[in-house]
Length: 219
Image (cartoon, rainbow, N blue to C red):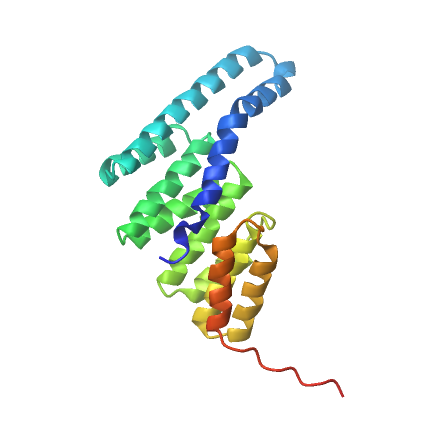
């Protein structure tokens, strides 16, 4: 599916950030609860849960690297079930959805992406789930559903270029060339200068729409 895995680099950024800052976040929450008493117990328990979730997620990545989809899905489902309070649950659900998409099981992929939208612990991860779900709906021919999903997005700001690109893909599929051109142009304007590959892809998408109609001069 075109573009579905293009956000994977963004997911990797989230993984890296959590590995580098997760313990500080946990400690900050614990300190904030200090006035309620028993925070040392809570801190220890929360850190243990985070460590277990991290270890479980590393096992999931190992199964993915071995291309053992059955084991990867089972491991991912265990993470979602046992560590739903951690960011690793959202990452695991995204990984399961990716495998399901690649295996042609769009129904299962939609369910896991919906879970990410509803339950992931960061707004960035929730928006990745929304973007990927829109792509799955679009690939299945549900352009109206995909468009409604993006228009209902409550968290603008994260991954705006990707958001506009998917909007462009939807409008292009609906035959609305000018709306597609507008969305792709916005996506180009929001690109990070280092995203040269995406810049080239967006330029091709704009070119495929043909030449924009000339504007009539003002009277």
